[in-house]
Length: 151
Image (cartoon, rainbow, N blue to C red):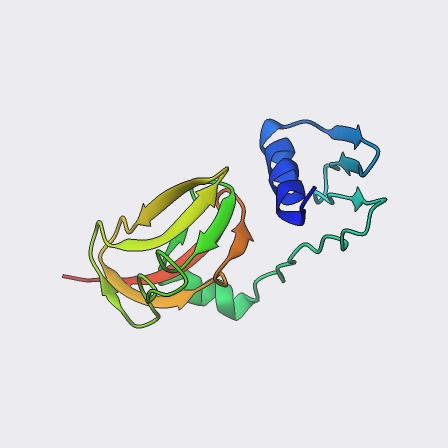
């Protein structure tokens, strides 16, 4: 079982609302348990597959919260993998500083081998891209900060 398959399995379990799942085969053992405080997926592998690492996000500072209040946050509508461009050889859909209008393609989120184009729901200027290319994202995770167009 590949690391990406394990991540997809964990994402599926998270989305399903199950509290605990234990899967065991000859090659792999996976035990995922959620707690009420902070979900902490745990994967123990009996094969030579490298251990999973989950990105952590620092809590926003007071300054970041005030900054974000002036901007619109575009969030992920699903769990999946975030891609900034249609393919590795092509340029990103948008970059920081770009002006976008409603309907502008911002990124792709791949979920279970389905590629979903995410479009802007607002017109404005991309202030910050909050996710690295080819990174896992959660449902409702902030992806972009947009300064709305006034007037």
